[in-house]
Amino acid sequence: MMGTPLIEAKNVSRRFSRKLDYAEKIARAFGANLSEKTVHAVDEVNLAVHSGEVVGLVGESGCGKSTLGRVMAGIMPASGGEVRWKGRELAGLKGPDKRQARLAAQMIFQDPMSTLNPRKRVIDIIGEAPLVHGLVTRPALRDYVADLAQRVGLDPSYLDRYPHQFSGGQRQRIGIARALAVKPELIVCDESVAALDVSIQAQILNLFMDLRKEFGLTYLFISHDLGVVKHICDRVVVMYLGRIVETGTPDELFSNPKHPYTRALIRELPSISDRRRDFTPVKGEIPSPLHPPSGCHFHPRCPHAFARCQQERPLLQETGPGQASACHLNDEPSPAARTGTFSTVS
Ligand code: SF4
Image (cartoon, rainbow, N blue to C red; front, side, top):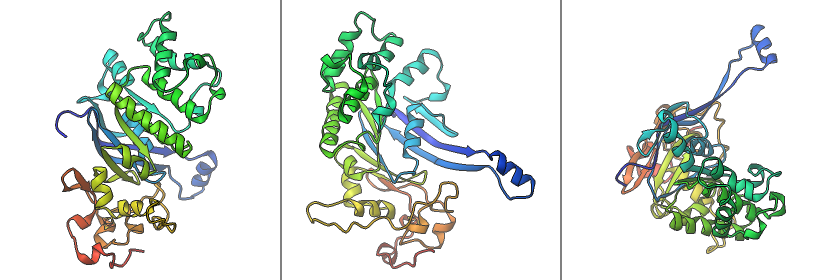
């Protein structure tokens, strides 16, 4: 895609440090080999999202996708690199520009109950932010919120109820209306349908797509479930242990995945047509981000790993139109590697 992205992560890293507790400090004073631990949740990631796009960000739990989503939504600072909103560095924005960018990127989370104030009525939950930011006057608030409620499929006569009086799907609709209330351009959905029943999931996904058309929204759709993103995204980005390992259109990525990790994830997808029940899980456990493997983080689990994989980080490189992957096999393809006859690094 050409033109300035709506939002762009450039070499973005996010680290979390865990300081030593009191007992550990004493142990260190007596000679124990203890030091502060650092988790590299996001490791020099580049990701551009253009206006109107729906980008799916997928990977196993703990791969850093939610952290990257929070950093791009502006609710968590990056430890390194920069996030650009319409070409301007987010961290450098001041005054009304900063406020505007902050409102224009909203986030919807997995568990609406934990993000909705149980003591507030729905009208106040949805109406608070637009009122505070002067997007609506108090006399016009009820009509404003009722209109939003209707657009997300909530009965406007329920506006004076509390969150616990709604079902899970309805609470998610309240969360969506709250995000829409400040007229966002980008919505970051963090596992927003993961906690819902399958039939409700489909309704909420359809709602997201209807709202995309109605309001011209852009989505960064974070999910551990490739099956969900396959049908709604224009582009899919696969993350593993803080890094992007593959990106492409759903058609390309699902029919011709280039990265061994993507292939393993796709093999896990249940298939109704062949009634397959013996899914092949990605072999091994995701390594601790406290001690990520050297070189390619995926090498301890990769059936094609060879010596270079332990030493050198593979960079994302184009493998076809609109598709890129980060794997040394892009430079050193061999039939043996492709068919998995390389010995696995132990
Ligand atoms: Fe990583 Fe090497 Fe496997 Fe490619 S072949 S995914 S670089 S371990």
